[in-house]
Length: 426
Image 1: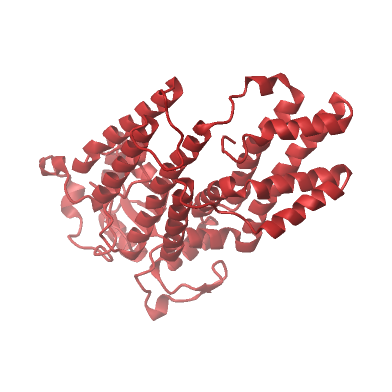
Image 2 (image 1 turned 60 degrees about the horizontal axis):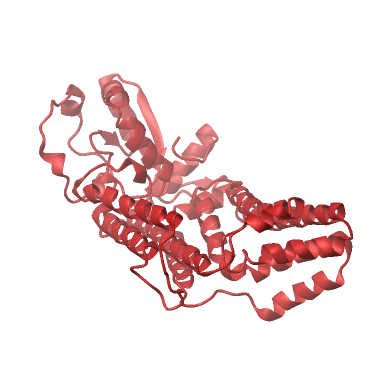
């Protein structure tokens, strides 16, 4: 909402309704319909994505290295756009056609086309945000994720227009347009750039490159948020920024928050867990140096009995401190040998919530010790594409609409057919 191409349109649009409506009540009704039309348009886009892809395809896309690389590039482009290098706009002929339709159509149809016109005219500001939202919603692999995300975005966009029409005094209390709107865009650019690195990290994990590890990620995030703090303090300027005569209190508070967050991440370079970044930063096993790794603690009997090597352990790594099997049959055979129940964990390289569970729940000694001592832990990665299945394990999956030719697809099909779920962690 606080964007240079949206914020100034609120008083203009509301004034239009008040004049055209003939009465305040009619103007309010038209503004409400206008707001609902905005919501319908954006939710329709989200539903269209759901219909085109479906939950299975969204889940597969979210764990695809190519998908993650493409969206890394896309978010970097959005960030550069927010920094002012260029504007992302739709073809002017298309926008003008919708605008003319709004002028020539009366009644509810006219209001709907006005909402469509707003969506198109504001695309240079909202396009990068919508793109990021759809990327994030799709990357979770949830069926209605894109539609729910678009509903939230549209509601936030439509609400100020509707409230301003119902309560005209609200317009008098709104801050005036100015250079601060551009500062909002630049800060969003920094956030887009930081989020883009998460998708690059997911591609690195899925393809086992091994170069974009936890330290590299944290160094880049520290620099990004420190620079955003310096920008808010006026120490860093872009060519299109207006002169900053003084620092406002809200701007100072945001600068303090940004620089403080950058400082908070510094201990992570030496192995601090950084729970606030669970699921965003690469997992701890990618860390090259952990300061506390040399400490000696008691070794459990379960660890002593565990095999020194298991299937796929050259490419797949357990959470720190846990003994894990990555092959279902091998894990079941070991569980029968030691007479323990199994704990089956469907997970993924790019699964944010999986890392959050490991970093915030499993790390609790009361929980972790039970898993280590009482169960045989088997982790089945649903997005492992580099480990190919033997011929006798490959079969056609009705759920995937394809062959289970790699470990990830085999595990994904097993979860869907055996347990009726395709979400992780499970």
